Image (cartoon, rainbow over all chains, first blue to last red; front, side):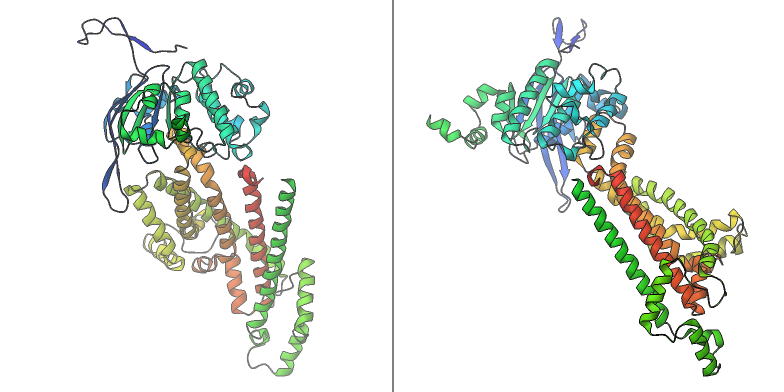
Length: 280
Length: 307
Protein backbone atom coordinates (compact mmCIF):
# COMPACT_ATOMS: atom_id res chain seq x y z
CA UNK A 1 0.00 0.00 0.00
CA UNK A 2 1.30 3.46 -0.83
CA UNK A 3 2.31 5.37 2.25
CA UNK A 4 1.75 8.70 0.58
CA UNK A 5 -0.75 9.68 -1.99
CA UNK A 6 0.79 11.42 -4.98
CA UNK A 7 -1.02 12.94 -7.91
CA UNK A 8 0.36 14.07 -11.20
CA UNK A 9 -0.76 17.59 -12.04
CA UNK A 10 -1.26 17.81 -15.82
CA UNK A 11 0.46 20.68 -17.57
CA UNK A 12 -1.56 23.73 -18.47
CA UNK A 13 -4.23 23.27 -15.83
CA UNK A 14 -3.81 26.79 -14.56
CA UNK A 15 -1.92 25.71 -11.42
CA UNK A 16 1.67 26.56 -11.80
CA UNK A 17 3.12 23.63 -9.89
CA UNK A 18 6.01 21.64 -11.22
CA UNK A 19 6.00 17.83 -11.21
CA UNK A 20 4.26 15.54 -8.70
CA UNK A 21 2.43 17.20 -5.80
CA UNK A 22 1.89 15.53 -2.47
CA UNK A 23 -1.76 15.79 -1.69
CA UNK A 24 -2.86 16.03 1.94
CA UNK A 25 -5.03 13.24 3.28
CA UNK A 26 -7.14 15.88 4.98
CA UNK A 27 -7.55 19.49 3.99
CA UNK A 28 -9.88 21.76 5.94
CA UNK A 29 -10.44 25.35 4.83
CA UNK A 30 -12.51 27.87 6.75
CA UNK A 31 -14.66 25.19 8.40
CA UNK A 32 -17.69 26.48 10.28
CA UNK A 33 -19.98 24.31 12.40
CA UNK A 34 -23.00 25.97 13.98
CA UNK A 35 -25.39 24.52 16.53
CA UNK A 36 -28.72 25.79 17.70
CA UNK A 37 -29.20 25.90 21.46
CA UNK A 38 -32.21 23.70 22.27
CA UNK A 39 -33.52 25.95 25.05
CA UNK A 40 -32.72 29.49 23.96
CA UNK A 41 -32.88 28.85 20.20
CA UNK A 42 -29.68 30.87 19.76
CA UNK A 43 -27.12 29.75 17.22
CA UNK A 44 -23.55 29.37 18.39
CA UNK A 45 -20.43 28.49 16.47
CA UNK A 46 -18.72 25.38 17.78
CA UNK A 47 -16.10 25.63 15.03
CA UNK A 48 -15.36 29.07 13.61
CA UNK A 49 -13.36 29.26 10.40
CA UNK A 50 -10.78 26.56 11.11
CA UNK A 51 -8.24 25.61 8.45
CA UNK A 52 -5.76 22.78 8.72
CA UNK A 53 -3.92 20.28 6.63
CA UNK A 54 -2.80 16.76 7.44
CA UNK A 55 -0.18 15.41 5.05
CA UNK A 56 0.13 11.72 4.24
CA UNK A 57 1.95 9.90 7.02
CA UNK A 58 2.00 12.98 9.23
CA UNK A 59 0.82 13.03 12.82
CA UNK A 60 -1.12 16.13 13.73
CA UNK A 61 -2.83 17.05 16.96
CA UNK A 62 -5.66 19.35 17.84
CA UNK A 63 -5.46 20.44 21.45
CA UNK A 64 -7.66 22.60 23.59
CA UNK A 65 -9.74 22.44 26.72
CA UNK A 66 -13.16 20.74 26.86
CA UNK A 67 -15.76 22.52 24.74
CA UNK A 68 -13.22 24.17 22.45
CA UNK A 69 -14.70 22.39 19.40
CA UNK A 70 -12.00 19.76 18.83
CA UNK A 71 -14.31 16.75 18.51
CA UNK A 72 -16.89 18.72 16.51
CA UNK A 73 -14.10 19.64 14.10
CA UNK A 74 -12.93 16.04 13.80
CA UNK A 75 -16.45 14.72 13.26
CA UNK A 76 -17.19 17.32 10.57
CA UNK A 77 -13.82 16.77 8.91
CA UNK A 78 -14.53 13.05 8.57
CA UNK A 79 -18.09 13.57 7.33
CA UNK A 80 -19.63 12.14 10.47
CA UNK A 81 -20.81 15.43 11.90
CA UNK A 82 -22.62 18.45 10.48
CA UNK A 83 -20.83 21.22 8.59
CA UNK A 84 -22.29 24.70 8.22
CA UNK A 85 -19.65 26.22 5.95
CA UNK A 86 -16.15 25.92 4.59
CA UNK A 87 -14.42 23.33 2.51
CA UNK A 88 -13.21 19.83 3.42
CA UNK A 89 -11.16 17.53 1.25
CA UNK A 90 -10.75 14.00 2.51
CA UNK A 91 -8.20 11.92 0.60
CA UNK A 92 -8.45 14.36 -2.27
CA UNK A 93 -12.23 14.17 -2.48
CA UNK A 94 -14.37 17.19 -1.70
CA UNK A 95 -16.86 16.21 1.02
CA UNK A 96 -19.42 18.73 -0.23
CA UNK A 97 -19.61 16.94 -3.57
CA UNK A 98 -19.51 13.39 -2.27
CA UNK A 99 -22.73 11.40 -2.27
CA UNK A 100 -23.55 9.42 0.84
CA UNK A 101 -22.67 6.24 -1.01
CA UNK A 102 -19.31 7.59 -2.20
CA UNK A 103 -18.51 8.78 1.32
CA UNK A 104 -19.27 5.31 2.63
CA UNK A 105 -16.85 3.82 0.13
CA UNK A 106 -14.20 6.21 1.43
CA UNK A 107 -14.75 5.26 5.08
CA UNK A 108 -12.38 2.28 5.26
CA UNK A 109 -9.54 4.66 4.38
CA UNK A 110 -10.31 6.83 7.39
CA UNK A 111 -10.60 5.03 10.70
CA UNK A 112 -11.63 6.64 13.95
CA UNK A 113 -10.62 5.57 17.45
CA UNK A 114 -13.13 7.07 19.84
CA UNK A 115 -12.74 8.39 23.35
CA UNK A 116 -14.90 5.81 25.12
CA UNK A 117 -13.66 2.36 24.06
CA UNK A 118 -16.50 0.46 25.73
CA UNK A 119 -19.13 2.83 24.37
CA UNK A 120 -17.80 2.59 20.83
CA UNK A 121 -18.09 -1.21 20.80
CA UNK A 122 -21.50 -2.78 20.35
CA UNK A 123 -22.31 -4.53 23.65
CA UNK A 124 -23.99 -7.37 21.77
CA UNK A 125 -21.06 -8.07 19.51
CA UNK A 126 -18.08 -10.21 20.49
CA UNK A 127 -14.59 -9.16 19.37
CA UNK A 128 -14.66 -11.88 16.71
CA UNK A 129 -18.07 -10.92 15.29
CA UNK A 130 -17.01 -7.25 15.20
CA UNK A 131 -14.01 -8.19 13.09
CA UNK A 132 -16.14 -10.52 10.97
CA UNK A 133 -18.47 -7.62 10.21
CA UNK A 134 -15.53 -5.59 8.91
CA UNK A 135 -14.26 -8.51 6.86
CA UNK A 136 -17.69 -8.95 5.26
CA UNK A 137 -17.75 -5.24 4.49
CA UNK A 138 -14.28 -5.15 2.94
CA UNK A 139 -13.23 -8.73 2.12
CA UNK A 140 -10.18 -7.87 0.00
CA UNK A 141 -8.93 -5.04 2.12
CA UNK A 142 -9.03 -7.07 5.32
CA UNK A 143 -7.65 -10.37 3.98
CA UNK A 144 -4.06 -9.45 4.81
CA UNK A 145 -4.16 -10.75 8.38
CA UNK A 146 -6.17 -13.25 10.40
CA UNK A 147 -7.95 -12.40 13.64
CA UNK A 148 -5.42 -13.97 15.99
CA UNK A 149 -2.45 -12.29 14.31
CA UNK A 150 -4.29 -8.99 14.30
CA UNK A 151 -4.88 -9.16 18.04
CA UNK A 152 -1.25 -10.10 18.50
CA UNK A 153 -0.30 -6.93 16.60
CA UNK A 154 -2.09 -4.87 19.25
CA UNK A 155 -0.63 -7.07 22.00
CA UNK A 156 -3.83 -8.88 22.88
CA UNK A 157 -4.29 -12.60 23.31
CA UNK A 158 -6.39 -14.50 20.77
CA UNK A 159 -8.35 -15.85 23.77
CA UNK A 160 -10.15 -12.51 23.84
CA UNK A 161 -11.77 -13.10 20.45
CA UNK A 162 -14.92 -14.57 21.95
CA UNK A 163 -15.26 -11.97 24.65
CA UNK A 164 -17.89 -9.24 24.71
CA UNK A 165 -17.04 -5.60 25.45
CA UNK A 166 -18.19 -5.82 29.08
CA UNK A 167 -15.68 -8.64 29.60
CA UNK A 168 -12.75 -6.43 28.50
CA UNK A 169 -10.83 -3.87 30.54
CA UNK A 170 -10.67 -0.28 29.28
CA UNK A 171 -7.19 -0.81 27.86
CA UNK A 172 -8.17 -4.08 26.17
CA UNK A 173 -11.29 -2.48 24.68
CA UNK A 174 -9.23 0.42 23.28
CA UNK A 175 -6.73 -2.04 21.78
CA UNK A 176 -9.64 -3.85 20.13
CA UNK A 177 -10.75 -0.51 18.67
CA UNK A 178 -7.20 0.10 17.39
CA UNK A 179 -7.10 -3.43 15.98
CA UNK A 180 -10.31 -2.78 14.07
CA UNK A 181 -8.84 0.43 12.68
CA UNK A 182 -5.61 -1.36 11.79
CA UNK A 183 -7.47 -4.18 10.00
CA UNK A 184 -8.76 -1.71 7.41
CA UNK A 185 -5.24 -0.45 6.58
CA UNK A 186 -6.42 3.17 6.65
CA UNK A 187 -4.62 6.19 5.24
CA UNK A 188 -5.85 8.39 8.06
CA UNK A 189 -6.48 7.46 11.68
CA UNK A 190 -8.43 9.95 13.76
CA UNK A 191 -7.93 9.32 17.47
CA UNK A 192 -10.34 11.29 19.64
CA UNK A 193 -8.95 11.44 23.18
CA UNK A 194 -7.91 7.78 22.87
CA UNK A 195 -6.38 7.59 26.34
CA UNK A 196 -8.53 9.92 28.40
CA UNK A 197 -10.57 7.23 30.14
CA UNK A 198 -7.66 4.87 30.80
CA UNK A 199 -5.29 4.28 33.71
CA UNK A 200 -1.94 6.04 33.43
CA UNK A 201 -0.02 2.79 32.88
CA UNK A 202 -2.44 1.70 30.16
CA UNK A 203 -2.32 5.17 28.56
CA UNK A 204 1.39 4.80 27.83
CA UNK A 205 0.81 1.39 26.21
CA UNK A 206 -2.00 2.66 24.01
CA UNK A 207 0.07 5.67 22.89
CA UNK A 208 2.99 3.41 22.09
CA UNK A 209 0.67 1.22 20.09
CA UNK A 210 -0.72 4.17 18.13
CA UNK A 211 2.82 5.26 17.30
CA UNK A 212 3.66 1.76 16.12
CA UNK A 213 0.52 1.47 14.02
CA UNK A 214 1.29 4.79 12.37
CA UNK A 215 4.87 3.82 11.68
CA UNK A 216 4.07 0.36 10.32
CA UNK A 217 1.09 1.34 8.16
CA UNK A 218 2.32 4.79 7.17
CA UNK A 219 -1.13 6.17 7.98
CA UNK A 220 -1.52 9.80 8.92
CA UNK A 221 -2.75 10.47 12.44
CA UNK A 222 -5.06 13.22 13.58
CA UNK A 223 -5.15 13.18 17.34
CA UNK A 224 -7.68 15.11 19.38
CA UNK A 225 -6.58 15.67 22.95
CA UNK A 226 -6.65 18.04 25.87
CA UNK A 227 -3.50 16.41 27.21
CA UNK A 228 -0.43 18.22 25.93
CA UNK A 229 1.94 15.55 27.20
CA UNK A 230 0.12 12.92 25.13
CA UNK A 231 0.24 15.12 22.04
CA UNK A 232 3.91 15.86 22.48
CA UNK A 233 4.79 12.18 22.73
CA UNK A 234 2.96 11.20 19.54
CA UNK A 235 2.53 14.12 17.15
CA UNK A 236 4.72 16.22 14.90
CA UNK A 237 2.46 19.23 14.45
CA UNK A 238 -0.16 20.78 16.67
CA UNK A 239 -3.12 23.13 16.31
CA UNK A 240 -4.29 24.81 19.51
CA UNK A 241 -8.04 25.46 19.58
CA UNK A 242 -9.93 27.87 21.74
CA UNK A 243 -13.65 28.64 21.49
CA UNK A 244 -13.93 27.10 18.04
CA UNK A 245 -10.88 28.84 16.57
CA UNK A 246 -7.29 27.76 16.00
CA UNK A 247 -5.19 30.25 17.93
CA UNK A 248 -1.80 28.74 17.23
CA UNK A 249 -0.33 26.12 14.92
CA UNK A 250 3.11 24.74 14.31
CA UNK A 251 5.56 21.93 14.95
CA UNK A 252 5.03 20.43 18.39
CA UNK A 253 8.51 21.25 19.62
CA UNK A 254 8.21 24.92 18.62
CA UNK A 255 4.73 25.39 20.04
CA UNK A 256 5.58 23.67 23.31
CA UNK A 257 8.98 25.31 23.87
CA UNK A 258 8.18 28.74 22.53
CA UNK A 259 4.41 29.30 22.55
CA UNK A 260 3.29 32.43 20.71
CA UNK A 261 -0.24 32.69 22.07
CA UNK A 262 -1.23 33.45 25.64
CA UNK A 263 -3.80 30.61 25.66
CA UNK A 264 -1.12 28.06 24.68
CA UNK A 265 1.05 29.34 27.52
CA UNK A 266 -1.89 28.90 29.91
CA UNK A 267 -2.42 25.35 28.69
CA UNK A 268 1.26 24.56 29.11
CA UNK A 269 1.31 26.08 32.58
CA UNK A 270 -1.67 23.93 33.55
CA UNK A 271 0.16 20.73 32.54
CA UNK A 272 0.91 18.43 35.48
CA UNK A 273 4.54 18.94 36.47
CA UNK A 274 4.79 22.29 34.65
CA UNK A 275 5.89 24.16 37.77
CA UNK A 276 8.45 21.53 38.57
CA UNK A 277 9.84 21.75 35.03
CA UNK A 278 9.85 25.57 35.22
CA UNK A 279 11.85 25.49 38.48
CA UNK A 280 14.29 23.05 36.94
CA UNK B 1 -20.12 -14.97 37.85
CA UNK B 2 -21.71 -18.42 37.97
CA UNK B 3 -22.87 -17.91 41.57
CA UNK B 4 -24.41 -14.61 40.56
CA UNK B 5 -26.23 -16.32 37.69
CA UNK B 6 -27.55 -19.07 39.98
CA UNK B 7 -28.66 -16.51 42.55
CA UNK B 8 -30.48 -14.54 39.85
CA UNK B 9 -32.22 -17.67 38.54
CA UNK B 10 -33.25 -18.66 42.08
CA UNK B 11 -34.61 -15.17 42.69
CA UNK B 12 -36.58 -15.31 39.44
CA UNK B 13 -38.16 -18.63 40.43
CA UNK B 14 -39.01 -17.25 43.86
CA UNK B 15 -40.73 -14.23 42.34
CA UNK B 16 -42.55 -16.55 39.95
CA UNK B 17 -43.85 -18.73 42.80
CA UNK B 18 -44.86 -15.69 44.86
CA UNK B 19 -46.72 -14.16 41.89
CA UNK B 20 -48.57 -17.42 41.29
CA UNK B 21 -49.51 -17.69 44.97
CA UNK B 22 -50.80 -14.08 45.05
CA UNK B 23 -52.77 -14.61 41.82
CA UNK B 24 -54.40 -17.80 43.13
CA UNK B 25 -55.30 -16.17 46.46
CA UNK B 26 -56.75 -13.10 44.74
CA UNK B 27 -58.83 -15.31 42.43
CA UNK B 28 -60.14 -17.24 45.46
CA UNK B 29 -61.00 -14.08 47.41
CA UNK B 30 -62.70 -12.37 44.44
CA UNK B 31 -64.90 -15.41 43.89
CA UNK B 32 -66.17 -15.15 47.48
CA UNK B 33 -66.58 -11.38 47.56
CA UNK B 34 -68.82 -11.06 44.52
CA UNK B 35 -72.03 -12.29 46.16
CA UNK B 36 -73.95 -15.53 46.67
CA UNK B 37 -73.83 -17.74 43.55
CA UNK B 38 -76.91 -19.73 44.71
CA UNK B 39 -79.08 -16.65 44.06
CA UNK B 40 -78.10 -16.71 40.39
CA UNK B 41 -78.42 -20.44 40.00
CA UNK B 42 -81.73 -20.92 41.85
CA UNK B 43 -83.21 -17.43 41.44
CA UNK B 44 -83.97 -14.92 44.21
CA UNK B 45 -87.28 -16.58 45.16
CA UNK B 46 -85.86 -20.04 45.90
CA UNK B 47 -86.62 -21.35 49.42
CA UNK B 48 -83.77 -21.07 51.97
CA UNK B 49 -83.59 -24.87 52.49
CA UNK B 50 -83.02 -25.44 48.80
CA UNK B 51 -80.36 -22.71 48.73
CA UNK B 52 -78.72 -24.21 51.81
CA UNK B 53 -78.66 -27.63 50.16
CA UNK B 54 -76.90 -26.17 47.12
CA UNK B 55 -74.41 -24.31 49.32
CA UNK B 56 -73.62 -27.61 51.00
CA UNK B 57 -73.26 -29.34 47.63
CA UNK B 58 -70.85 -26.65 46.41
CA UNK B 59 -68.91 -26.76 49.66
CA UNK B 60 -69.64 -23.11 50.44
CA UNK B 61 -70.85 -23.92 53.97
CA UNK B 62 -67.39 -25.06 55.04
CA UNK B 63 -64.99 -22.73 56.89
CA UNK B 64 -63.18 -20.34 54.44
CA UNK B 65 -59.74 -21.72 55.40
CA UNK B 66 -60.83 -25.29 54.55
CA UNK B 67 -62.20 -24.03 51.23
CA UNK B 68 -58.94 -22.17 50.59
CA UNK B 69 -56.76 -25.22 51.28
CA UNK B 70 -59.04 -27.49 49.20
CA UNK B 71 -58.87 -24.95 46.38
CA UNK B 72 -55.06 -24.97 46.42
CA UNK B 73 -54.97 -28.76 46.53
CA UNK B 74 -57.26 -29.07 43.52
CA UNK B 75 -55.39 -26.36 41.54
CA UNK B 76 -52.09 -28.17 42.06
CA UNK B 77 -53.63 -31.43 40.90
CA UNK B 78 -54.90 -29.65 37.78
CA UNK B 79 -58.54 -29.80 38.84
CA UNK B 80 -60.25 -26.42 38.36
CA UNK B 81 -63.70 -27.75 39.24
CA UNK B 82 -66.91 -27.63 37.22
CA UNK B 83 -68.82 -24.64 35.91
CA UNK B 84 -72.08 -23.85 37.72
CA UNK B 85 -73.54 -22.52 34.52
CA UNK B 86 -72.42 -24.98 31.85
CA UNK B 87 -72.21 -28.17 34.00
CA UNK B 88 -68.88 -28.97 32.40
CA UNK B 89 -65.30 -29.11 33.60
CA UNK B 90 -63.79 -25.60 33.67
CA UNK B 91 -60.60 -26.92 32.09
CA UNK B 92 -62.61 -28.29 29.15
CA UNK B 93 -64.45 -25.00 28.77
CA UNK B 94 -61.20 -22.97 28.78
CA UNK B 95 -59.49 -25.32 26.35
CA UNK B 96 -62.50 -25.11 24.01
CA UNK B 97 -62.39 -21.31 23.92
CA UNK B 98 -58.60 -20.89 24.06
CA UNK B 99 -57.91 -21.48 20.32
CA UNK B 100 -60.26 -18.60 19.42
CA UNK B 101 -58.52 -16.20 21.77
CA UNK B 102 -55.09 -17.39 20.66
CA UNK B 103 -56.09 -16.84 17.03
CA UNK B 104 -57.31 -13.32 17.78
CA UNK B 105 -54.30 -12.37 19.93
CA UNK B 106 -51.83 -13.80 17.40
CA UNK B 107 -53.45 -11.88 14.54
CA UNK B 108 -53.78 -8.66 16.57
CA UNK B 109 -50.20 -8.76 17.87
CA UNK B 110 -48.83 -9.60 14.41
CA UNK B 111 -50.50 -6.48 12.99
CA UNK B 112 -49.34 -4.44 16.00
CA UNK B 113 -45.71 -5.54 15.63
CA UNK B 114 -45.62 -5.31 11.84
CA UNK B 115 -46.87 -1.71 11.93
CA UNK B 116 -45.69 -0.50 15.36
CA UNK B 117 -42.01 -1.49 15.08
CA UNK B 118 -41.30 0.04 11.62
CA UNK B 119 -43.30 3.12 12.64
CA UNK B 120 -41.17 3.58 15.77
CA UNK B 121 -37.93 2.98 13.85
CA UNK B 122 -39.00 5.44 11.17
CA UNK B 123 -39.85 8.09 13.77
CA UNK B 124 -36.52 7.61 15.59
CA UNK B 125 -34.38 7.70 12.45
CA UNK B 126 -36.19 10.81 11.22
CA UNK B 127 -36.45 12.55 14.57
CA UNK B 128 -38.03 15.99 14.41
CA UNK B 129 -39.36 15.58 10.85
CA UNK B 130 -43.01 15.29 9.87
CA UNK B 131 -42.58 11.49 9.73
CA UNK B 132 -41.76 11.58 13.42
CA UNK B 133 -44.67 13.88 14.22
CA UNK B 134 -47.12 11.79 12.17
CA UNK B 135 -45.97 8.56 13.84
CA UNK B 136 -46.19 10.12 17.32
CA UNK B 137 -49.70 11.49 16.64
CA UNK B 138 -50.82 8.10 15.36
CA UNK B 139 -49.38 6.43 18.45
CA UNK B 140 -51.10 8.92 20.75
CA UNK B 141 -54.42 8.36 19.00
CA UNK B 142 -53.98 4.61 19.20
CA UNK B 143 -53.47 4.74 22.94
CA UNK B 144 -56.36 7.12 23.64
CA UNK B 145 -59.15 5.67 21.49
CA UNK B 146 -61.31 3.23 23.53
CA UNK B 147 -61.33 -0.20 21.88
CA UNK B 148 -65.06 -0.82 22.30
CA UNK B 149 -65.80 2.51 20.52
CA UNK B 150 -63.33 1.74 17.75
CA UNK B 151 -64.84 -1.74 17.41
CA UNK B 152 -68.36 -0.31 17.03
CA UNK B 153 -67.16 2.29 14.50
CA UNK B 154 -65.38 -0.33 12.40
CA UNK B 155 -68.49 -2.53 12.45
CA UNK B 156 -70.66 0.45 11.47
CA UNK B 157 -68.36 1.34 8.57
CA UNK B 158 -67.01 -1.93 7.17
CA UNK B 159 -69.87 -4.30 8.06
CA UNK B 160 -73.03 -2.21 8.08
CA UNK B 161 -72.34 0.65 5.61
CA UNK B 162 -69.88 -0.90 3.14
CA UNK B 163 -70.80 -4.54 3.75
CA UNK B 164 -67.23 -5.67 3.09
CA UNK B 165 -66.68 -7.70 6.22
CA UNK B 166 -68.85 -9.67 8.66
CA UNK B 167 -69.90 -7.77 11.78
CA UNK B 168 -69.25 -10.58 14.21
CA UNK B 169 -69.00 -14.32 14.97
CA UNK B 170 -66.11 -16.49 13.85
CA UNK B 171 -65.39 -19.16 11.25
CA UNK B 172 -63.49 -17.72 8.30
CA UNK B 173 -60.38 -15.52 8.07
CA UNK B 174 -62.68 -12.65 7.02
CA UNK B 175 -64.33 -12.84 10.45
CA UNK B 176 -60.95 -12.29 12.04
CA UNK B 177 -60.05 -9.05 10.23
CA UNK B 178 -62.11 -6.48 12.15
CA UNK B 179 -61.54 -7.85 15.68
CA UNK B 180 -57.81 -8.32 14.99
CA UNK B 181 -57.44 -4.76 13.67
CA UNK B 182 -59.35 -3.41 16.66
CA UNK B 183 -57.23 -5.43 19.03
CA UNK B 184 -53.97 -4.35 17.39
CA UNK B 185 -54.46 -0.61 17.81
CA UNK B 186 -53.51 -0.16 21.47
CA UNK B 187 -50.47 -2.48 21.49
CA UNK B 188 -49.39 -1.04 18.13
CA UNK B 189 -49.37 2.47 19.58
CA UNK B 190 -47.54 1.28 22.68
CA UNK B 191 -44.96 -0.63 20.62
CA UNK B 192 -44.43 2.32 18.24
CA UNK B 193 -43.82 4.75 21.12
CA UNK B 194 -41.49 2.41 22.93
CA UNK B 195 -39.58 1.51 19.76
CA UNK B 196 -39.10 5.19 18.99
CA UNK B 197 -37.83 5.98 22.49
CA UNK B 198 -35.60 2.91 22.61
CA UNK B 199 -34.21 3.49 19.11
CA UNK B 200 -33.55 7.19 19.77
CA UNK B 201 -31.54 6.19 22.82
CA UNK B 202 -29.59 3.53 20.91
CA UNK B 203 -28.91 5.84 17.96
CA UNK B 204 -27.30 8.36 20.29
CA UNK B 205 -24.80 5.79 21.60
CA UNK B 206 -21.14 6.15 20.59
CA UNK B 207 -21.07 2.70 18.95
CA UNK B 208 -23.46 4.01 16.31
CA UNK B 209 -20.98 6.72 15.27
CA UNK B 210 -18.34 4.03 15.37
CA UNK B 211 -20.41 1.78 13.06
CA UNK B 212 -21.02 4.67 10.64
CA UNK B 213 -17.32 5.52 10.72
CA UNK B 214 -16.48 1.94 9.70
CA UNK B 215 -18.51 2.41 6.53
CA UNK B 216 -21.66 0.45 7.34
CA UNK B 217 -24.73 1.34 5.31
CA UNK B 218 -27.50 3.30 7.04
CA UNK B 219 -29.68 0.18 7.01
CA UNK B 220 -26.82 -1.83 8.54
CA UNK B 221 -26.29 0.75 11.29
CA UNK B 222 -30.01 1.04 12.04
CA UNK B 223 -31.00 -2.64 11.96
CA UNK B 224 -27.82 -4.53 12.88
CA UNK B 225 -26.63 -2.23 15.65
CA UNK B 226 -29.25 0.27 16.85
CA UNK B 227 -32.27 -2.03 16.52
CA UNK B 228 -30.54 -4.99 18.13
CA UNK B 229 -29.71 -2.82 21.12
CA UNK B 230 -33.19 -1.31 21.24
CA UNK B 231 -34.91 -4.67 20.82
CA UNK B 232 -35.16 -5.85 24.43
CA UNK B 233 -37.65 -3.28 25.79
CA UNK B 234 -39.74 -3.74 22.63
CA UNK B 235 -39.68 -7.52 22.92
CA UNK B 236 -40.62 -7.27 26.60
CA UNK B 237 -43.62 -5.10 25.86
CA UNK B 238 -44.73 -7.36 22.97
CA UNK B 239 -44.70 -10.40 25.26
CA UNK B 240 -46.37 -8.63 28.19
CA UNK B 241 -49.02 -7.09 25.93
CA UNK B 242 -49.71 -10.59 24.59
CA UNK B 243 -50.31 -11.69 28.18
CA UNK B 244 -52.66 -8.78 28.82
CA UNK B 245 -54.61 -9.45 25.62
CA UNK B 246 -54.90 -13.17 26.41
CA UNK B 247 -57.07 -12.38 29.41
CA UNK B 248 -58.18 -8.87 28.62
CA UNK B 249 -59.90 -9.08 25.26
CA UNK B 250 -63.35 -8.97 26.90
CA UNK B 251 -64.59 -5.77 25.21
CA UNK B 252 -63.40 -6.81 21.75
CA UNK B 253 -64.80 -10.33 22.03
CA UNK B 254 -68.11 -8.90 23.26
CA UNK B 255 -68.41 -6.32 20.45
CA UNK B 256 -67.63 -8.91 17.77
CA UNK B 257 -69.39 -11.87 19.51
CA UNK B 258 -66.06 -13.67 19.30
CA UNK B 259 -66.31 -16.99 21.17
CA UNK B 260 -63.02 -16.69 23.07
CA UNK B 261 -61.95 -16.58 26.70
CA UNK B 262 -63.02 -12.95 27.16
CA UNK B 263 -66.59 -13.81 26.18
CA UNK B 264 -66.50 -16.85 28.50
CA UNK B 265 -65.19 -14.68 31.37
CA UNK B 266 -68.01 -12.19 30.84
CA UNK B 267 -70.63 -14.96 30.91
CA UNK B 268 -69.04 -16.43 34.05
CA UNK B 269 -69.05 -13.07 35.87
CA UNK B 270 -72.64 -12.29 34.85
CA UNK B 271 -73.80 -15.68 36.18
CA UNK B 272 -71.53 -15.49 39.27
CA UNK B 273 -70.09 -18.78 38.14
CA UNK B 274 -67.23 -18.33 40.61
CA UNK B 275 -65.40 -21.65 39.92
CA UNK B 276 -65.21 -20.66 36.24
CA UNK B 277 -64.19 -17.06 37.06
CA UNK B 278 -61.53 -18.46 39.36
CA UNK B 279 -60.28 -20.86 36.70
CA UNK B 280 -60.08 -18.09 34.07
CA UNK B 281 -58.28 -15.72 36.46
CA UNK B 282 -55.81 -18.46 37.41
CA UNK B 283 -55.27 -19.32 33.76
CA UNK B 284 -54.65 -15.63 32.91
CA UNK B 285 -52.28 -15.22 35.85
CA UNK B 286 -50.32 -18.36 34.99
CA UNK B 287 -50.08 -17.23 31.35
CA UNK B 288 -48.70 -13.92 32.56
CA UNK B 289 -46.21 -15.54 34.90
CA UNK B 290 -44.99 -17.90 32.17
CA UNK B 291 -44.66 -15.01 29.70
CA UNK B 292 -42.66 -13.05 32.29
CA UNK B 293 -40.34 -15.99 32.63
CA UNK B 294 -40.07 -16.08 28.85
CA UNK B 295 -39.03 -12.40 28.88
CA UNK B 296 -36.24 -13.24 31.32
CA UNK B 297 -35.07 -16.20 29.25
CA UNK B 298 -35.09 -14.21 26.00
CA UNK B 299 -33.30 -11.33 27.74
CA UNK B 300 -30.48 -13.63 28.77
CA UNK B 301 -30.23 -15.01 25.21
CA UNK B 302 -30.31 -11.64 23.45
CA UNK B 303 -28.09 -9.65 25.83
CA UNK B 304 -24.65 -11.12 26.59
CA UNK B 305 -24.33 -8.82 29.61
CA UNK B 306 -27.03 -10.68 31.58
CA UNK B 307 -25.90 -14.19 30.69
